[in-house]
Every structure is written in C-alpha cells, then in structure tokens.
Image (spheres, rainbow, N blue to C red):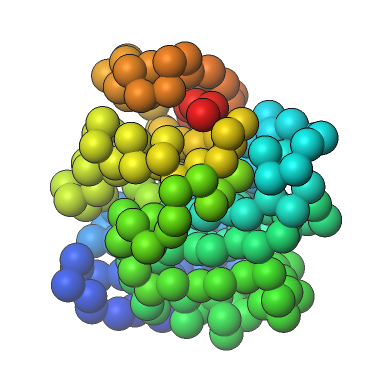
Length: 227
C-alpha cells in the first residue's frame, strides 16, 4: 500500500510524522511508532463519552452542567471532538506537547473535524499536561482526560511515565471538583495503574474496549477515578 508523507517535523522528542495511506486514512507516528489513525477512532471517542457520562447531571459546580475539561494529548482531535459534542461542556483545555500536532489540527488536515476549530470553548496549549494542570487552581476541573501515550506499559516517550504515577494522579485529584472524574486511556491492562489509582482515588473503574485492527482482535482499556 502506498503511503504519502503529509507533514514531518523534528522535535526534541524525535520525528513526528503525519502519513496518508492510499485509502485516504491519516496516520500519526512518532519516531516510527504508531500513535493513532483516522480509521480506528472509537476508543478515543469512548474515552470522552464514558467519562462525560460518569459525571453527575445535577448540582452546581460538581456537575456536568458547565463542565470544565482538561485533555492531555490532542492526537488527531477525536477525543476533543467528542467532548465538544456535549453542549453541557463549558470549556476545554487541551495540552499537547508537540506544537506541530496543534498546527496540523488548526490547518484542518482532518476534514471531518474542521468545524471544531471555530468552537470558542477550545484552548490549545503547546505544553506538557503536568505543567498545564499545575497552573490550575484546586477544584477547578470537572473532567481530566489523559491520552498522552499508549499507556504505562507501551510508552512512546519514557518521560510520559510520570503521568501514570502517584504524584501526578494526586495532582489530578486536587485539580478536580468534588464529583469530578479523571479518565486514562491505555493500550493494555495495567494492574500497576489500577493499584495506583485506587491508592489516590479510593476506587477505580476499568472499562475494556474490544478493538479489531485488520485481522487482529484486541482490547484497549479506560481507567476512571472519581474525587
């Protein structure tokens, strides 16, 4: 199958490439490692939907009404798209470490998401999610969605391991309003992550997501903790 290089950039973390396959599918790779494509986006959408649906629908700030959301990892924009589809969401801050990924999103390289760019609820930050969260006041978020890597066992960047560790998850807990939720996407089941989230949040919910990639059937996983 022929593959076209749509865009390439060298960053401090290596080569970031956006490819277009012969069938039109866009694929994002970092240092040759597959990150995501536009053919299989259900798990990114489910990350947003499952987390949003877990928020209470009544109350004041501890509710889905007027929810303030922080997304770690823009990718190709599908998690953001699903969050924006909920009219009860007040604002969405997206922390994306690679400025080029933000530029590609803003240029409309994914046509089906192009209309999202004009949504005034979006704030795009070319920064690490840990730094963006550190700037938020305690209790100022209803939802934190973390899709910065492939999960603790399949890291594209070793530095991302801090996102799955107790100190940062404790910061997430502090950043959430009462009733707020943190949701983490992982390519594989991680007992270590479950244990850490349980230590921080008291309980953790794991949602397996069946996925078919060509002839391969596998599972992705969502982990949710509530303040």
